[in-house]
Amino acid sequence: MNEGRCVKCGSCLRACPVLNDPSGAQFPGPRTTGVDAPRFLEKGSVGQNALRCTMCHACEWACPSSISITRSMLELRSELTGERLPGHRRMLENIAAFGRTVSTEFSGWRESGERTLYFPGCIGLGRLTGLTASVSALLTSLGIAHDISREALCCGSPLLKIGARGEAEDLRRRNAEVFSRYDRVITSCPGCTYQLREVYGIEAEHIIEVLKGSDLCTKLEGRWALQVPCHLKRGLSPWTADDLAAILGKAGVDVVRMPGEDACCGGGGGMLSGFPGTASSLARNKMEMYRKADVEGVITACPFCSLNLGREGIRVLDIGEAIALKD
Image (cartoon, rainbow, N blue to C red; front, side, top):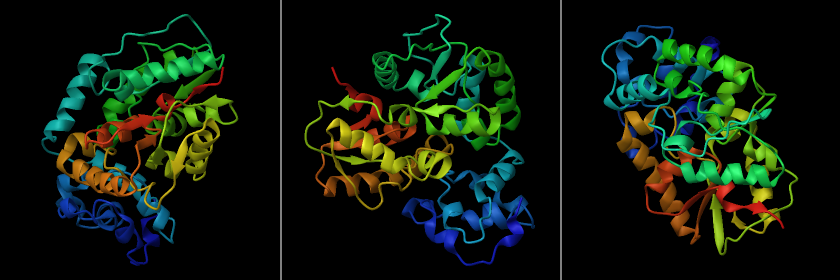
């Protein structure tokens, strides 16, 4: 780790969406949890407040010393002791029961031995099954034959975020044989994409990367805003916001760009399950911004963004639900 580079400039504190939200008063901030606590006496006193972070990478982007703050936070979380938060405990119970962080409601499995795997992620298989069906249909229309395997379990990213490193490693081992059957893996969840690349060593492709250059269309009317996922822009590529807008614009969507479209919605890092009040507060802040823009709704490319923002009363679509292949 490189925490010793910190010059105490406060850039990470100003960038942190949780610290700057009225509901985030108990979060010690990225400098305490990601820089100071791992090295000094604060390590034992931060406790579960170390979990009050969405892992959005905004602090790292703001840091002039390029400190790996979120990686350091993950390390700190893996060393936490004591009883888990109720929502995080439910995640682990679901992993034990279903192999995923939520119960699986999806029924449209495709297991024909294709060489491409579409990996929707836990939310896409358990909460937003329509999203998964839409992306699968889109891939088929693009001529990409694919499986959706019930044997491919949670990638483990949500477990690392709550400090359950051992359980995440167990999932990686269980998934290894399944992923070895495929030459190509396509995802809808940027967190899954990041995890497969960084932990599994698999060059997974997010659906945005697959759609670039395709001849697409839309049936959407009116003006639509973007929610740019944190792990997509600050994890995979800083240009994905423009890629998302370009794909939608080419398909005929009237896209409204605005400052703050890439700010965290509060759905990641275990926040939604661990501290739902803070997750909701962050989402409401974004919804207020979108409502003031007088748009029909929001288009994103992350199941967690869709889930968290969708609870605040505005229409939210995944990119796979917003477009189709031209006839």
